[in-house]
Length: 473
Ligand code: FAD
Ligand code: SF4
Image 1: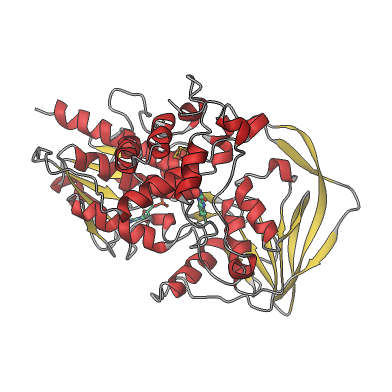
Image 2: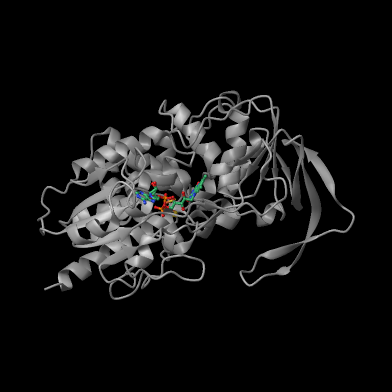
């Protein structure tokens, strides 16, 4: 129980301190500092313990939020970290990158009138602090079952699956084509949202729990899938979705048109001093940059361009601010850092001279009726075309599935959008594919989504695999 149930009347919602704008505009460091301990206690105590924790239900991994807020308020950090790890395999990551305004904090009873409890910042504090105090998940008492599971993909889905399997006595071996774990957490999300040391520390923690990583190993190229299905008792697929949507605009082959992920990974590899030949570093210093799209990827690109000292950075999106898919807090950070937003504009073509980008032709849009998904459709406004000048155009329209051919060869069914079909999270053997020995989760099942939903599916799949292995003679 909170010490003072009326705390929320006296203490307003507060975020942890932010780095100065001056520093943020040039450095790839996390925007928020660690929340000071006194602030954690005061903010955690704002929780009403309302008895019907909507925050917990809205959180895709159903974290025991009110309980760990209470422990944090009492300074019982190790117990809070233990509890937080019971439901989440990467809580220190989710505290940093979840769109809390749409998830736990959006559902907080205090949200509308008093400001939600700062759940994400406290989740980050609890786990970072426990790690600094030397706490690590203890699996020393776990009895080994003598079963081995191969996991393809070291993104959040694959890591979450490995975590739950290791805690249940299964030997998990995680394969990834990249040189470090994390998937998009490492090679996608920039360091100003998630510093790279967070994932290095996570790899060390998982290795100490007995999880093995085979990095720089692409399945289908360096090792064939067939041998994994023969060698292991079960396989979990967590390959993500990587086919960039380009909108089919004329002029896409012009010099200066850049796919978002290539830009972001090239920049990250440069900062990690580990260049990757497929993702060359690209500096947009002194250039006028236009980013097409309105999701998390677009926000990461505009803010990377700011830090690279672009002359101007514009985010152009076909709906209005209200209907942007990107997290509100990231949009606010981008605005604070000097990014301009051009809403209700649809790109028609990339304009180029002698093959080099000079701008983007847009038509203005207005929002029509809602589509089947409940989002209002943009309609072009007559006679409203204009050209926005640009030296570089970044395409951040989103991603579609790109499943490898070998899945079908092994009886893994795909749906009409090329996503892997599974039994779902609540089936008898959760997340099982049409091949009983193969399970799948994360973006390659849901379509491009969120870190925390990938974690939820990785954990559900691990339970499915455990049930499947226990059911085997
Ligand atoms: P991924 O993270 O994509 O991991 C898949 C892994 O599989 C990769 O490491 C890849 O190398 C590996 N792999 C693929 N094929 C093979 C193969 N054949 N052999 C070996 N390894 C293979 N979500 C949020 O919640 N908050 C955010 O702020 C946020 N920002 C984002 C920013 C960007 C730029 C992008 C692109 C996405 C962002 N997302 C964000 C979405 C989130 O990152 C994804 O939903 C999540 O990472 C999906 O997890 P996953 O494990 O399914 O796949
Ligand atoms: Fe909120 Fe994400 Fe943490 Fe769940 S995992 S409590 S949604 S920040």
